[in-house]
Structures are given as C-alpha cells and as structure tokens.
Length: 109
Image (tube, rainbow, N blue to C red; front, top):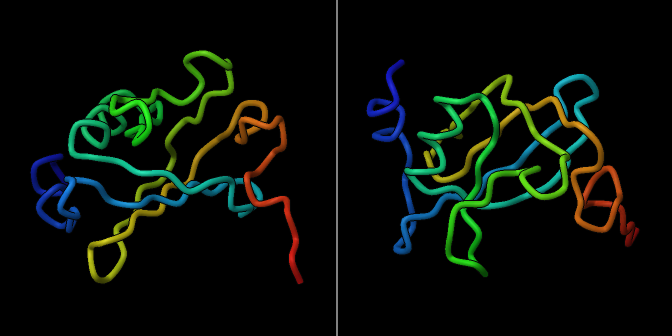
C-alpha cells in the first residue's frame, strides 16, 4: 500500500496527530506510547527508522538520534477506527529516556 493511501486510513486529531504504541517485535513487550503526524509516518515508512512527533518540542523526533537507541520498523498497523497506530519494532537499547527497556515499568496493581 502506498503512503498516501495509508494516510487516508488514519484519523488524525485536531492537531494533526495520532497516538502510536510501539511494541517489541520479538517479545511482544509494549515499549512506549507517543504521537505521529503525517510527516513522521511518511518518514518512518520511507526509511524504516521510527520517527515520532514531539509535542513538547513541536518538531520531528527521530527515535535514537541523540541516544543511539533506535527503533527499526518491522510492522505497521492501523486500528479499526483509524485513530490509533501500533508499530512493531526492533529496539536497540532501552526505549525509555530513564534507561528502562520500556516506559511501562511502574506497576500499580
């Protein structure tokens, strides 16, 4: 499927963003949740290296660009409503800025 066709299947919010869950392909572990826009999705699909949209910096966030902990895209899914993405990746190093493998390391119950 071509990128323009993929973008038509996605329902972006009023800011032009869509939430995305990153999951480790080999283990199924959920690594993180972030946001993408049309530009970051296009770049991710073109390069195979995951690129998000940073809401705080208001710019593209190329995962691993400063840390060296890259995410390589293996699979890309759009949910049934088109308003959430799931990407399965090969993660190099930790996914979380704290140094943890996943951002979901705080167990509540």
